[in-house]
Image (cartoon, rainbow, N blue to C red; front, top):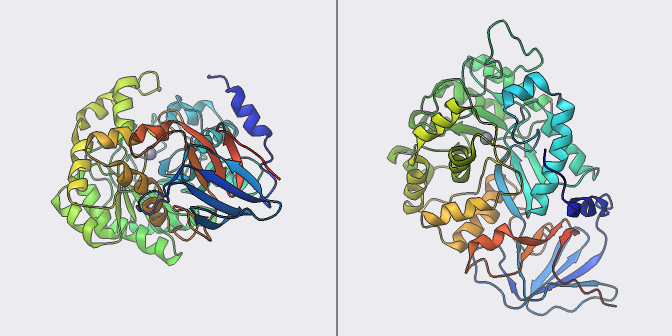
Length: 432
Ligand SMILES: [Zn+2]
């Protein structure tokens, strides 16, 4: 087990339970607002309570306002990761988690992981499922209540998987039962029931396993797991509740079936083809690649608790994920930002940017991906993803210029969420 950084204790001591009520004027050398527009240099942001009131080159500080001068830093919107697994301890394989740990263990580590993620600059995440069902619902609610610090969350609650599929939580001997985990659904009717059960217990969206997975003994990653009819049942039922479906999919057939069924995102999307690209161009669906995780499973899988057979599964996917990303870039798709953090340590999410850059993604494209585009995918473009009046005061700062070096985003020095500062390692000069 890793020891907690003393800085984390300091962050825990911050008054995160107090709702932001202050008026704050933030000054910085450069502001990238998330819209894709050229940076504002210099820039100021006026914040009142949890909201942004004004953004401009020169703003007057109202009487009594606190001034936070970030000097030569670049300010950006809080980053968004569409694919995290925040609950549980990183490095424990999910099968061991189910037979050797408790939901309490998962929840406690979830608190630590949420803080690591927030302090790394990710102020909003879509949590793609916990091993212990619904622990992410409790984490989301505790964060929203101000009981613990963490990103704003949309959560999956429980996976929806076919028997023998990627998310089958009973991949043990047939004589070993994991009685409390019920996530199997094998027909449109069972899927409807699973979707309803998840929403009843607090899920914000549905995570369905459309194809096999790397970290599983189930059906191979390239194989389709659910029929288009089954996937459509999930989408129809979720849409009745006004909520979207996110489909885990590596193989082409699973990706295409999920897109035809009407999912909001295909996550991983390892084996895109021309048909998938055409559907992605024409519909309200997005491809959410996770390139870093595949690289880390091959390089550090053993240390991350991944069994050899599953490292082998990742090796067989090889360069396919990168080729799909390059194809999507070339097709001009809007590509959101996702990582699969939890398979690797939380807080390293921003390392995904450098991997994407190797395939030709430009820094401004990358920033818009993790801000405006990801906010839109979550249906939260009215509150996060850009720095403009009326939006939540979720902002981060880095010492250098991320347009010159995208890895600056791996070194976030200042984090504000909803007008409350959670990290401040740049010069902060209070006045008045
Ligand atoms: Zn995942």
